[in-house]
Image 1 (tube, rainbow, N blue to C red):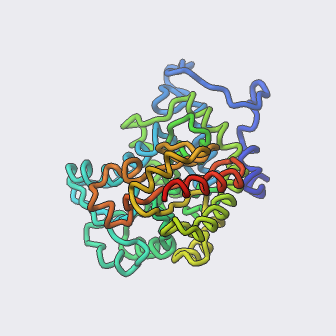
Image 2: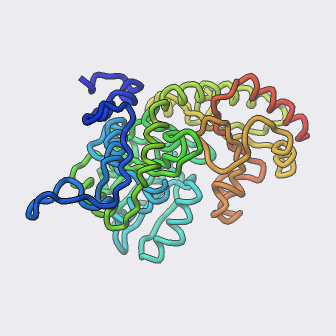
Image 3: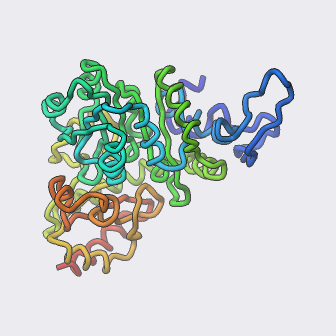
Length: 384
């Protein structure tokens, strides 16, 4: 019966809606690091909390169900999830990944995986011909982030999956910006879906977490082995916070994405704004493709002012959003990619990706959209 529920109902009504032992409507937090074994010869389901914990298991089952996968994994951070998934690769393997990748992923690929003998090529993943031209005999992974961070470029998920099947590669996709509320990559053929659950899934700026989901059973077993081997697990208190946040995911995403479209439309007409990046705008290059593979353009947008000085004046004058690292919270978060999310990239790499000194990223929260626009109007006047 659960399979027939709409997404927002699944967030609340699943196998763990009530505790079977007590009837509690909140998942119990099992703060146990080890578990008594009642039989000398046959151990129970849980033995040591790194390998499995009842509270963490609820999170993992929940995200697997929401993404349409068979197995989920809860990690101590988004980067822990991404790093562990990369360990599915081996020495001398090669990765093709989008140029517009999160700064932490860029740092991992360029400064850590290279030390392990895993090579990479950055490409414009909006161009499938360029993607295919850079696939080598030893290419084992095509890595997507769509919409990309922070310039919101849209990758053709189905097209990349088709290439991966042609050349026998894995496909990973960072689904942090849209979550399964708006985009379900496993249903489009992706092998591993990754999340910084710190963002929209948690939604309240009070937990750091990462998630991964797979559909293939064998791949799930391999990732489970790595998860246990590295011990990159999410603690039970954070699991509980994440579960609480996920209950309101649908209503938060719907409201914030509606606000993002209103703000993006308003910014695109403002004389002080050079450019707006948001695939929900009809004149955005990724608009049609985005509509074909996701149900919304999401709650994140970026916009470009004249230069760094204009950005500084704007940030000093703005009052409603917090100016901070991260995104996806109930409060609107304004970020400066050049010194925040993409600080790990050298300046020339940032510029090549369109991450100029005038670029700001906005994650729209749950405030009044009228208040946000009025606040931005007075701040843009100050930035001149």
